[in-house]
Length: 157
Image (cartoon, rainbow, N blue to C red; front, top):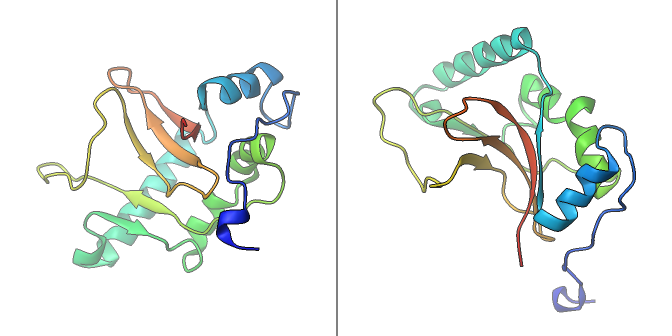
């Protein structure tokens, strides 16, 4: 079997209530390509996570000045976030139980620092590398509202 023989087309997720997502949210994902927002971490957890990443980035010096990429297999704290059932349950409701975290990206634009890379105009989001089937888990922030949450995005054909 060659790569050309593999069907990488979109397959709708079964529209049924899952561990975290309701059937209507999964239907929205199938139709629109994303589902959002969903809160995972409380304010205290976010403060602890932010302090953890600030320390990691500072410890990495110039290499950590913009962010931390693909450290999920080397840093227990990143691994713990990537494998948190409160996140994975949402993902599993869409893609099923076989989930692999092969990349992670924690990006932080410090005050006064110019951004590297493209900025979305309608909303700002940091996305993981797309999977071969076009799905991706993204960190999403709606412009003007200041609310943050995770969103599951599907690349539109």
